[in-house]
Length: 575
Ligand code: ATP
Ligand code: MG
Image (cartoon, rainbow, N blue to C red; front, side, top):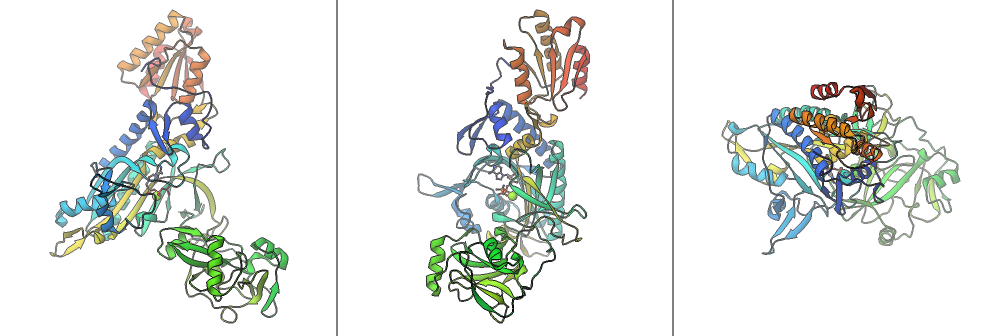
């Protein structure tokens, strides 16, 4: 490819709406252009990268025994009504009507469609196991599309679905996919960590995410997930799923007897503990949430934080948010109280389900809100002053230095970008949609399913997050749009131009993906662009060509060497 005709426009500045480095660099280096919020054009360089990733994914999926298909992007509502997800998927599901007023949606994922394929096509256990996959655009009307390709509304995903006769079969299919995923990301030049995770809207019981770990103190916060891990035993989980043992904590408030005390203006735990001169660990905090439109009061020890996904899952909910002040007012009115947030307690609440985190059950002589402004009950005890809620679960966020449940070492936390996710679905979709096969004994059984996603476009962006420097992108060779760029320093110098041209031709003939920068541009511009777009190797033809030497540069290490054109060509072909 000649740079003079390559459709790429590099920019001098980063785009003003970009927060993270992959978004900044992909726009500035001319890979993507925004069409609408969370919707991007993939320009030629980007499309080459995406196809490289797709091909690695394809090769590994095929090797793992999966078969490629392509399902429609637009899906009929009926299938989603059958699975029960039409009503619960929420606003991320982009719904539309056709000219006959039939309800449709843009596919955010394809469990329903694939289950309908299996229902029609698989009759007997003899046809199982089978794993079908596609690489396709997905649409999710994300509430906060941001970070460029990391969180778009339209994005490219590989999604695979396995069908087995029993759990043992699913375990095997799942392991085969986990192994394939490890190889895929390794081949893409990305180190990943496989961590336990919550199953979210996809459903099912067991799931793991593949995380690209990013440095928390890097200049951006592209790692949207907190990953807890144990350096000793290897336990690792997304914060929405991570469990931990608590550090030792003082749980006895050492208050004499139960007593209502004035605690003016103590709206936060910090203010309350300061005012009473007690540690936060002897306070029972009460927070009001709205889960699928219903009020929930969640109790947790004062020093800890609620993990909202865990809380939502405790009620099999789909949507959770903290209650607004007017909603708290409504609860107070209904219960005959008039307190604001900070003074709420579980006793006497009406129309509210109550749940407690495990941290509160051993509290003794603790402090708790009693739904009266500027007052708290001190020296409270369960069963005497307040009833211990019957629903007690782990609904807390793990914290760094909590103890590992497996080996009691201290947990560490790091930031991660989720590039892949695998789920054991079991019979969630096959039962709901009556997708069955005839087993050996003649009985009809629902398929045991698994599903497996990889964000193709997110993986490309994650590679940029991991591999860049102050000059631009540093693509891992396997997914780079081109392997090498040949740059003559001066387009006025005939020798330089003809040597560059001949190197270019020889590399082309050898099947190497190569760019020749034949533009009439200053050397500085050409070298800067080569660094910015991140081609892994550069061969610069400059003045030293009179001694039959060119400069060979590896983008990742910035190491340069002067070697002959023939050596440079041989080296590239051998790599
Ligand atoms: P997230 O938690 O980041 O919103 P998810 O868990 O909802 O993602 P999955 O349903 O697991 O996403 O989809 C499979 C893969 O698709 C993810 O692992 C991720 O790589 C990719 N993906 C999901 N949502 C997006 C998005 N909005 N933009 C780009 N890639 C995405
Ligand atoms: Mg996921």
